[in-house]
Image 1 (cartoon, rainbow, N blue to C red):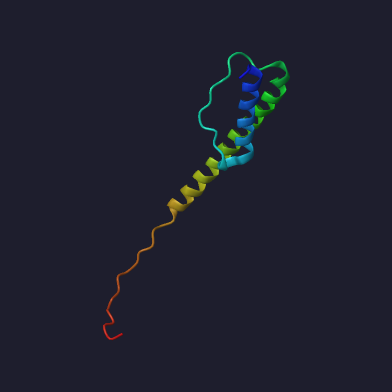
Image 2 (tube, rainbow, N blue to C red):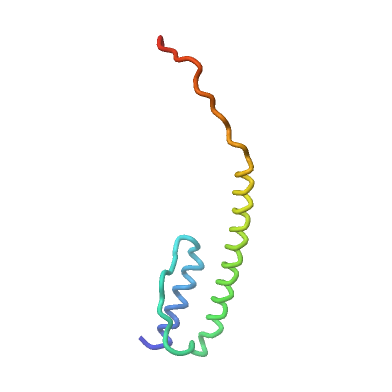
Length: 90
């Protein structure tokens, strides 16, 4: 596979992962040898910007979930009393 094709395939993988959200995690990858070809640099920068925005959104979501969990922990647990009697007749 040429470097051009390897870089294009890698960018395709990253774009599919970004488009798929939680549905598609790209797993490990091997960086192609050398810098990206000049005609793919703009596309690589766009993918990087999208990845950075996704990382930022995940940080915001994590902080919101942490606040919600903290609020839930402040709610006192309910105490359920055991039954006082047992109906054996039905």
